[in-house]
View 1: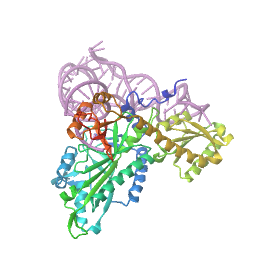
View 2 (view 1 turned 180 degrees about the vertical axis):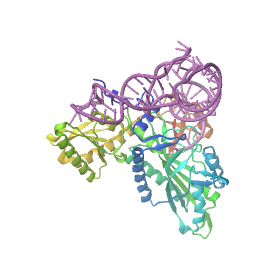
View 3 (view 1 turned 45 degrees about the horizontal axis):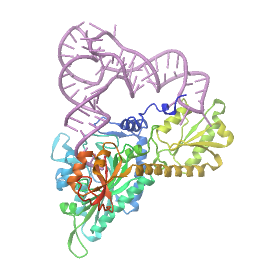
View 4 (view 1 turned 90 degrees about the vertical axis):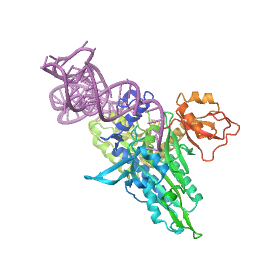
Length: 483
RNA sequence: CGGGGCGUGGCGCAGUCCGGUAGCGCGCUUGCUUUGGGAGCAAGAUGUCGUGGGUUCAAAUCCCGCCGCCCCGACCA
C-alpha cells in the first residue's frame, strides 16, 4: 500500500516548488488555461463560476452601500489619458494601443483601458452641475488590459476582469469615508466569502496609486511568505477633478471641485484563493465560493446499483431544494477512488459517499475537504447537518488561514536582524520606519521587500530606530516581499 | 528587460553528446470483467519532433535566427 500522497500524481508538491504547484492546481482543477496570446488566459467554467460567486456577493455589497452599476467604453482617446501627468506616467509602460480601424490608420490612437479614471472623469465633468447631483456613486464590472512583462495565471495577466468603483463627493471627509467604507466591504467579502484574512492598511507615497492622494489596501499573506494586494481603495482628493474640470455649483453658490474615490478588486482574488487554502491534494474551496459545495459519489455494485442511484438522486434533489450547490457524480467507468481524488483536486468542500452499507443504515458518509474528516450522518437529518457542516468548514478555513497569517507576522526592531530575516521568506515583518521614501527604497534594494502598508491608524514607533537608516523612527511599517 | 532552464501523440518523459525510417508510461476509443481512496484483460487510434532557414545522400539529433513556456531578479492589481 502506498502513502496517500502518491495518489496525487498530477500536481507538484507545494513544498517542492510552490510556483509549479500553483500552476498545476489552476490547470488541473480546470480553473484556467493559457490562451494563444502571450500573457492571456481563458477562465474556464469552473474557475469562472468561482468568480461569479465572489462577484455576485461583492456586487450585492456594492449595491447595498448605495452604488449603481454602469458601463464605460474599452477604448480611451490618448489625449484623455494624458490629462493627468502622474497617471499617464504610472501607466504608460503598460498601455496597449489601437492604431487602426479596418484598413485606416486612426488620427488619434486609442488606449485599451488600463483603468477607467480618464474616461469616467470626462463623463463626470459633463454630468455634475450642482451639489444636488452629488454624490455620484458608480461601479463598473469590466475587463482591462495592461501590457505586463511577466505574467502568471490569475495573479498577473495581460487582460483581467475587475470591478472599479468611481465616486464623486462634496467634501474631503465624505470621500475619505467612502474610500474606507469600501475597504471594509472588501475585507468583509474576503473573509466571509473567500475565507481569506487580510490586513487593512495605508500605502506609502511610493506604493500608492498614480494620481491618488491616499491609497488603502487589503493585503493578504500567501503561504510562500509573500504578500498579495487583494484590493485597493483610493481617496483621489480633487486631483482628477482639477485635471478633468469636474466642477459644480456648491451650497454656497460657488464653483467647487468634487472630491473623488476609486476602488477595485480583480480576478487576482482567484489566485489568492488557490494559494491561501490549497494543499498537496489540490484546490480547497470554502463553501461560500465553491461551484459545488457538495459532491455525491455513489458506491455502485451491480446488484444494488438501481437502489443506490435512486437514493442518490433523492438526496440530490433534497439538497438542491434546500439551496445547496450539489453535484451527483454518476459517471460510469470511473471508480469511486478515482472520483474522490478528482473532486479533492477540484476543491469541493464536502463529499458524500453513499453505498449499500449506508443504504442499510439509513445514513450517508460525509468527508470534509479541509480536514479530511469522515463522519456518517443520518439521512433523516441530512439538510440540517449538512448546512451546519458547511458553515463550520467556512469558519474553520478562515480560522486556519488567520492563524497562518498571525503566526507569520513578526516584529523586528534590529536592522541587522531585519536584513538577515529577508534572506528567507519570513512573511510579514513589522518594523520601525522613519517615513522617508529614500529609506524605503533602500530597504527594497537591500532586501527585495517593500512596505506593504501602515496600519489605518499608523502605530507610533517613538523610541525605536528606523530599520533603514538608524535614525528615530516614526511609525511601525509592515514589510514583505510582494506579488 | 537581464540571468538560468525547457519545447518530441492530450499529459509526463526517453531518444540529441556520437545524424541512419520516432519510442515508453499515463490518458483516449471499443468490448468484457470490475467499483467503500486513482481497477484488470484484450483490441485500437493519435506525431509536419515549437518555428524559419542552413549543412548533409540522410536532421528530433549538427549550425544560425525567431517564437513560446517556466524559474530567479528590476516594474505592477
